[in-house]
Structure formats: C-alpha cells, structure tokens
Image (cartoon, rainbow, N blue to C red; front, side):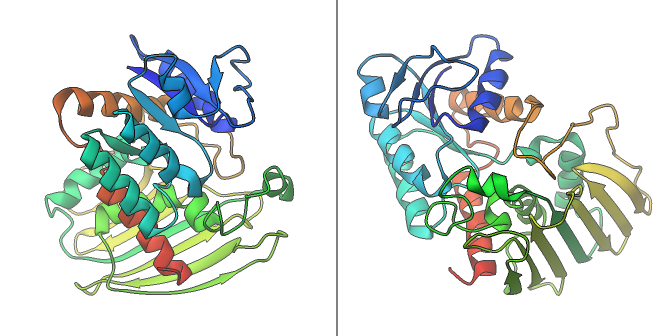
Length: 326
C-alpha cells in the first residue's frame, strides 16, 4: 500500500522505518500545516491538507500522527476521499469525535484502524487465547501499573502536551492507553470506576499520576495506575490472579507463570526493546510493522483490523470514566 503521513513529529520516524521493512509498501508524501518534513526524510513531498495531497499523488491510506484531539479531522477528510485510515493511539479524546470518525469511515467503506500495537506481542496473544478459552477459570484480580517518567522538557516540547484540549489528559490517555487497551481486550469494560488523580512532578494542566479502582459484574476487582511522575520510569506490570493461579507480565513479556495444568506460553525468543517507560522515542519498529501488515491484510481480505474502531473507542471511553469526563 501507499501511505500518506499526516503529521511529521517524532513518531513519523517510526512509521517511515516500519514501512521500509514491508515489501511493496511505501510512504509517498506527508501533510504538515507548517510545511515541516519528517527529520529522516527532509525531501519528502509535503502538502498542507490531505485533500491537496490527493489532488497531486495517488495513495491508499493515511497514517494520522497529529495531536490526539485532531484525529477525527484527518479521519473524516480521508474517508471523504475514499482512503483507509490508521490513527496513532488513542482513536480520539471525546466520544462525539470518535463517533464522527467511525461513522465517516463506515459510510465511505474504508478501514479504520488504531495503533494499539501491544496486542501484537506473542506473549500477550497467548494470554488472550487462553483467556478466551476460559483456561484460567474465574479471574478475580487484575492489577496494571504503568509507572512511567517524562521530564518537563517533554511537556514543554509542544504547547498542547499535558493539556485537556488536544492531548485529552495526562498519562492515562497518552502513555498508559496502550496498556489499558490490552487490559480491556482481556477483561472488558468494568461496571464501576472510581479514581484519584493528581499533578506532582510537572507544570501541566492535567494529571501526571493517578490510580483507578475497577469493579466488574462477575465480581473481579481491578486496579490501574498511570503515571509520568515515577522517575526513572518502570516497565509496565500486569498481575493477574485467578482460580488456576497467577501470572505476571512486564512490558508484555511473561515473567511469572504459576497456572495449574497449563505450560508457560512465554515466547522468550521475541523480546521487544521497550524504552517507553522513560522516553517517547520508538526505535524498535517491529510492532508497528505488525499493525501495518494487519491493516493491509484487513483491507485485502475485507475483515476488521486487529483493533476495531469500537474497541479503540472503548479504550478512550474507559479513560474518560477514569477522568470523570465521560
């Protein structure tokens, strides 16, 4: 497929690298209101809008890397042109914006995918299959800790960072949303959510640390911690306790497996080099490659993408409930 990058910030480097590893696919241009090209492709053709690019070149899909609260704008413009859409996480930051972009893509018959690439990790996929098969018995506790670190310079690098208007919040929607998406993929939406949020280590509008308590219809009690104030940054940790025992993952790798009667499905040969606990840069493109390949296969086969629009919407919905803004 031919891709148009919409937004040319840091993450565009990751997508350019990922697409270079997919035979037959290529980035054919970018969209930037300021005219800034990606740092790794300073001569890339650039236009101020998706529509302007479509009048000059042919492409199959757009990749939206603009601030969170602008994703719906790019998606609706691309859908009107009959282009498929891959948006960086989250899908968007309000229910109405997400409903607008989902409806536009459905009406145009184009695929809308979201880059929640933690779902592509082999250990996470193995756990998902076992969960769907009911292999763990009753799950009664699931505790997620996404305790990351970002310095003040990170937030100062963009006027929108750490604000409600375009970022949509702090670490829950910007960093921990990847982990929350996987949590929801396993356990679904809770019935009850209570939370406490605070700002401790940064001069920003939103939270930089918080905790949520979740209660499920089946009685399960879950906890989610999201932070960018946990210096120096720690690997995301998920602890699950159930009838058959317990397991623990760190950055999507199974590190403890005490489940009766089920061999440890850990795939230790596929280790992802995740520096996200302390840096916004993404050097390892393998999981973005997996998301892109899934998009191309979904378009080819006429099936939903790995992360459906409704699932991506649910992730933002839970975060809005944690924020008390739903």
